Image (cartoon, rainbow, N blue to C red; front, side, top):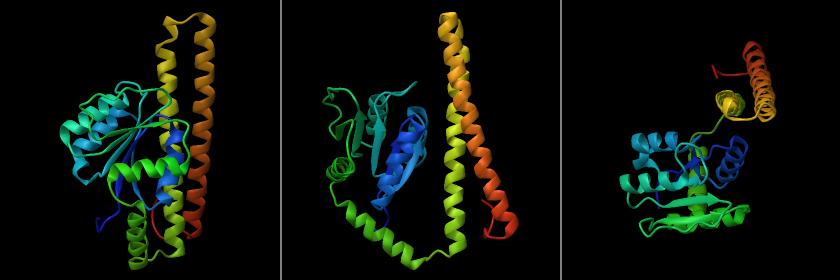
Length: 220
């Protein structure tokens, strides 16, 4: 199919769900590009869309939902296949000819099969390309360690950013809620933001310790 890995743009505002899907698909040998919402997903498509083979997006997201993103993607790249993940029944307009709806909950096999049919080829072929690429450029233990903690640090930072935005939203919406509901929403958002910040600092501390000990080959 291609000499490079199949590139999938994964768009979902749920950090934990997005990380789970990314990990699953990377094991299948796919290159995953992440976006935290439809707005960021559209920006990525506008900048690098020609290198993306498939759009995998959640339906319900703030600002721009998955269906609007799919319509925008197809306006830019009419041949780009799209898979929309949703927990509700979704009538697909005729204009979304390349769109597949994947109902939640789903398992690994169902997801991979949906992507395989949408792409029109075998995902295992991408996995073979990934193996070849790794063989041609074998990673040393230091590089493996660096890449692992670079990924962990990036994910923790994204999670903290998401939690901070949710806290800001809760503060902004406080006036439109009852005193009890507003206080509860802010308290929950504060807890999540604090936990996310603690985790980010914990991972950052591990990275710094590894760097000081010389176990990382270069900067994260």
